[in-house]
Image (cartoon, rainbow, N blue to C red; front, side, top):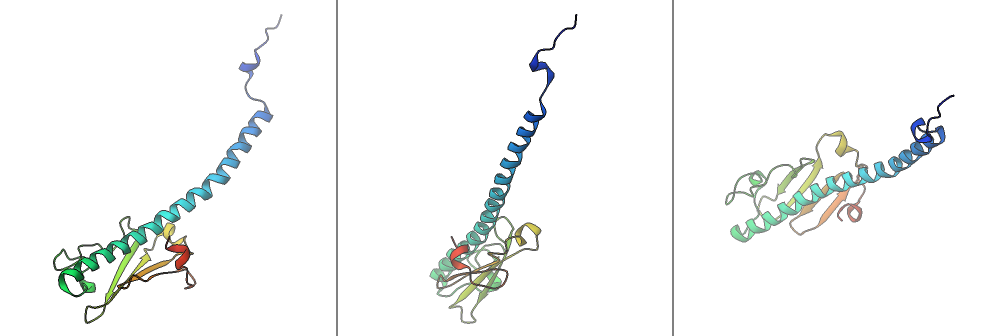
Length: 151
């Protein structure tokens, strides 16, 4: 007499395996683009945060000195400079500061560092801000994208 094996001990059927595979593919197809969009937003926030911090420090410097800090003073410690770094907090962007000769105007630009993951964001490639608080962003083709990027 032959012993029968209970159904639970025999394993999975082909239909069960294919169903599980389809579920994994669907979840992956939804999750990966969402994760990539989240990463892009994090990088953009890194640039915006660095520029807003620079704006706040320039305003503080102006209040104490009746002029804005020179471009060379970006990384110098207060009271001679702004005490900032030349890159964003997470290092995705480099910050460039330009100041007028009379010290009464400035502008700053955040450009992505040469990294594969940053360069993938072609919609918001470069961010900038100036002493008047005017914000600007451009895409990889140098088209205006301020409304999309400065959110």
